[in-house]
Image (cartoon, rainbow, N blue to C red; front, side, top):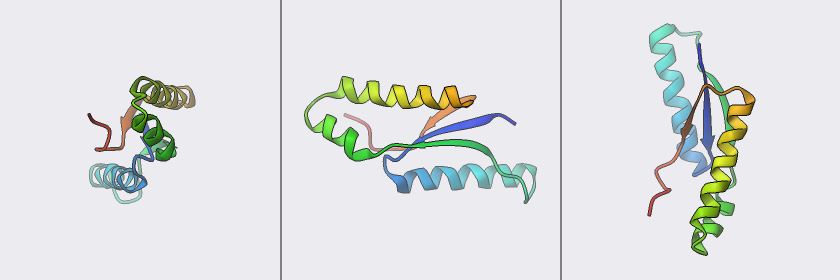
Length: 88
């Protein structure tokens, strides 16, 4: 099974929904005792919102890219961004 990297915290509620749905899908496919291999990096959204409010979108993107790279270094085979908030 591949390892999924979840980049969460934008908001923690949406991160929880992603985690729950992914594991439900794995259970439905593989059986009740199975769960997904997941590495979670939950950021503090206040830090990102502060950058956004100052118009520092490049910096916010660089911060998120760094967090995604940390998931990759930790062994994630793919990365999902658990949000529907980051848009312009």
